[in-house]
Length: 101
Image (cartoon, rainbow, N blue to C red; front, side):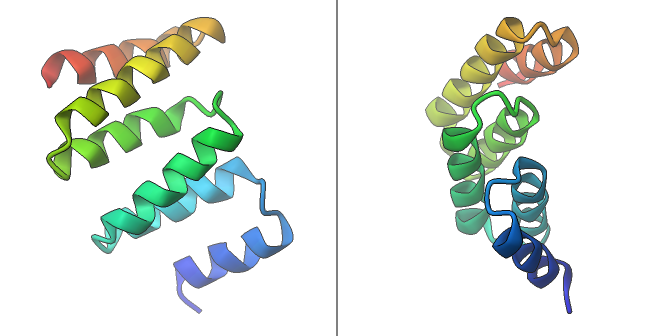
């Protein structure tokens, strides 16, 4: 069973597990399935907006897809959440990604 199939099986038992959703999105990125990765990241963040690490990866994905405005929005939303939860490491990474864009 490949990694995506295993993660999907785990998610069948724990559909709201943000860590598993994040891991699944990263696996989709590895196989260049950007559409699926984006869908997973967006669903994850809709259900768990404080899962701050996903904003960075979603932003990078959107950059690669040529959607600069959407990438900026992802970074800025992530920065807002990081500030709210006082995760300055994540805030700084998101800010740097935003500035690099």
